[in-house]
Image (cartoon, rainbow, N blue to C red; front, side):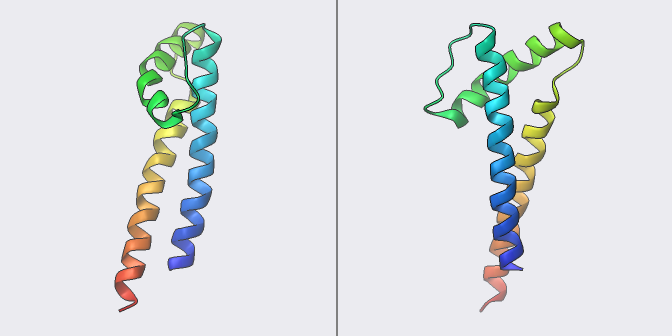
Length: 90
């Protein structure tokens, strides 16, 4: 169970990072100043901008928004799985 939690945390973290970069690239393309140094804080700062921009372009919110939140929740679920596995080791 621990291995499953660690692998799922790794995979979901990488996918979440991918969605974060996609969100920031779209926001930066509209000439909004984005710093890629602190990527996690920048994503949370610009999520509303991303939603607004993609709604203007397509009439709906971009898929990276939903992918970002889904993978963030899966990361938290993976952390809970890891903690439960550590609790069962005793």
